[in-house]
Length: 157
Image (spheres, rainbow, N blue to C red):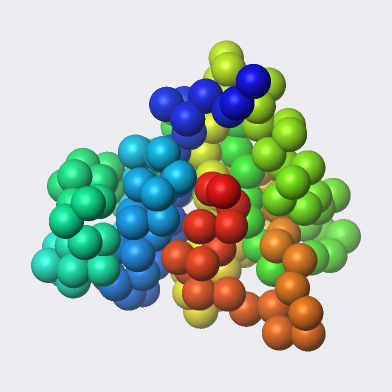
């Protein structure tokens, strides 16, 4: 059994760079996901997003759902996974992507799932992570910071 991809939405919380949104859309398309939400107070340049998405994922850019508040973007989801490099007691138990994937196979069959990513410079705050049922971190070497689109690709894979 596989995860029900039609029930999974990528939520980008306050991304700073349109190119990263476009690259994240390309990653989503490569992995068979077709829903992206962006939480932002101001729109990002669509042409910059489309450039990085390439023609293959342009439809995802055209169908991005925009929200002013994180709560609105997560409103229709029953299960939320937050991706973060920073761990700590206030951030709950953290799992690796493989463990998250195994869990989402079952959860996604009957639930709308959000994969939540933070901004390029700050990631997800403790307040953002309070919405999450699960927290995932990508194991890295000494340098933990990943480009937003790279993190999206690893988690979507």
